[in-house]
Image (cartoon, rainbow, N blue to C red; front, side, top):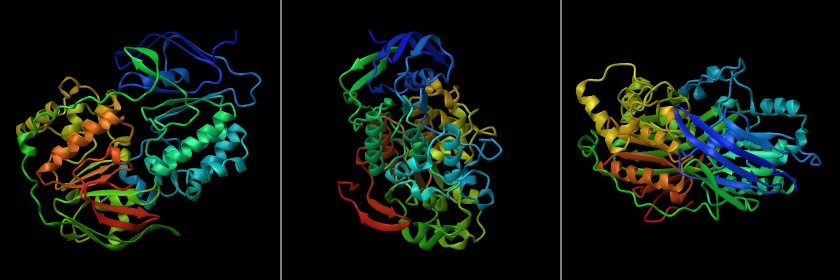
Length: 487
């Protein structure tokens, strides 16, 4: 009888003083491909990393590669978030660095990164070009790694994995940051490599999976159990009463929150934004959409004060022309922000309580003592978001879903005039996304202005009133919405 392709016995694994996998036993047979789901924090990522020999564990994990298969006898793990490095091998970038031209040659280009990877793995470069085209990534060849958004970084890692075609490919949250078209094309590519002999393990609670995924499992109480489907029954969510200080409307300095007049942004010969005209009034709730690479992140960087080219454009923020004497910190006082990139660069040494409190000062960590009134407000938000038990833990020790709740609390702690939520549900399952967006609806009921970036109608708050759609750096659609969001 043939040995299982993956054979796990008595696997015990914990992290940050918490045991997540207990005497786990699992067999994955030759030819099978799995989707592994389960609640946030149950150990899905820990299991994936253990199979790829990236974390220490107790027990036995045996990979029995097919000796007749010409594909590389490798286990390749594609993580949910990829941390790249600069030319000196350093990864400690800061958030605004992505938009500053001074750092333009500090990281490799996408083309150079792929050339190096191809040489390392002995791959033919002509075979990567169809993958780049299918994922809409061919136009990024000259882009520096630091210029890429979270979705674009995910695409780069997927391109490498599909190019290599290892015998076992594990992808953690494969659809993170990808637009609808990219998701569909990725599933087609995954089916193609599966037909060539690649076995897949996708760590995902998504239901729109490749046809080659015919087996499903969930982690429950430290064990991996086979299930018929990953669709879970809806759980009714009971929201706590919102803190009193957030029931009050934000104090608006002006009714004109944002005004852009023929805004253009270019990097050398590459034009990222073209003649953008957009006005946002106090209290409006906007949805910002567009395919990966359409210019959404750059547009938001102008509003948040992070992009140096804002001074060369006719841009008004909170009633003032950009460059009329205000500092970046003057602008940020009006704004609360969540984005995948900001999450990347957040202080890894901050506790949950400190992370929330840092929102008062727009820093990526807490570096000063809070007065009593502000401390009380932090405590109220900790309770509102159900984080009392975790308030003294490191933010990075929490499951991704709770990390996002912490950052949402940080974002609204000062009751900002403008709330910018850039793909806030990225990496969350459907239930977590529903909970998050119900919180957004509740928090925005006081008249707060909202810009929300999201690809899928199933992951949007109901308070959204208007939509702006970007396509290749240009405004394609500006419209008012009734009850249905178009995608």
